[in-house]
Image (cartoon, rainbow, N blue to C red; front, top):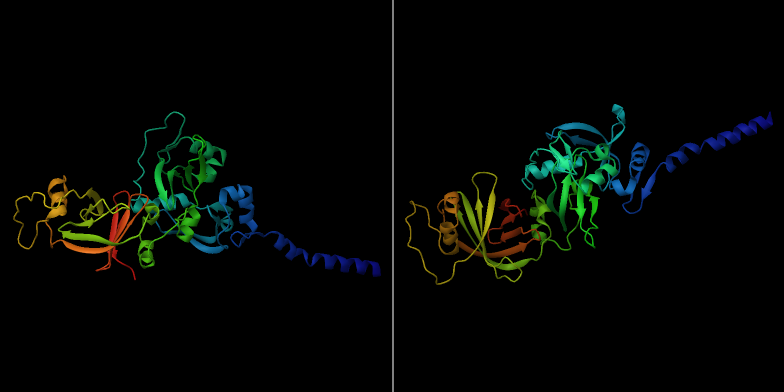
Length: 376
């Protein structure tokens, strides 16, 4: 009897720590980010490619709401964010763990803000490509081989765009969006050694920062304003912060003209930004300022009462560039000189800050512009 009791006690003693030990062994932690994965999400992460496919975890598991394509709330449940993905635990609905549709979410944001053109349907696949009638887009090399080799439709979903050039922070290159991911073509040396990588979409959406961080930033006084700009990732990296830059602006019936004394790092290329406010959304075109001091002056015109004819560089662009006069109408106030901050970007975009009235223009590389009083 004593032997049986001893055996039972040993069994109980051996069983008691079993549950916490199992729970502890189920956690896989990463000192690189300080987060752990466990349970169904860990099993999915390991079964479907692990670190190269999903990256490190960048959050704990939390209950979050996931939007539908129309931005309504479509699902709420346990979510954990990784560098390249958002894993959603749909076990309560019997679906197990699913990857979030991050590609669709970010492409929708870019499309709505006109950073990239809306996807255009294509007639069919070119030779060597695969066409998907579900979305009217194709996958071609080198994205096609990567798509097929690493999980295809289940892992990435359907293509939502054709390949196009995109600037994300300090990196620019060819990308293609899929329902769940963004594939990026990274140029390697020697030529022909290019590599397809998955963009860090989850980090961009979760943390609000681009995948490739710029070596420098904007002045602290402009950071809050820049953070509110929808196309901030597409600006690329600031090349320089040029202070005390001579500036000028003039409002028109349907827009505004902005003059910058030097739009390159040597401050030797004056330019005029023509911003059109009608029709919406705002758009701009940049023209070189070719007006020469002491040059011929055209005969004055007779604007309607209360309006003004632009002069000097503004007047030259207004008269000579096709469509500018028709788009802007007459000036509603005289030209006003100023000085401020000019920040050219690697994408060709720029920030112009009129410090006297604390008004900032953000010029995207694709003709989109937004402008507002600086956020304090």
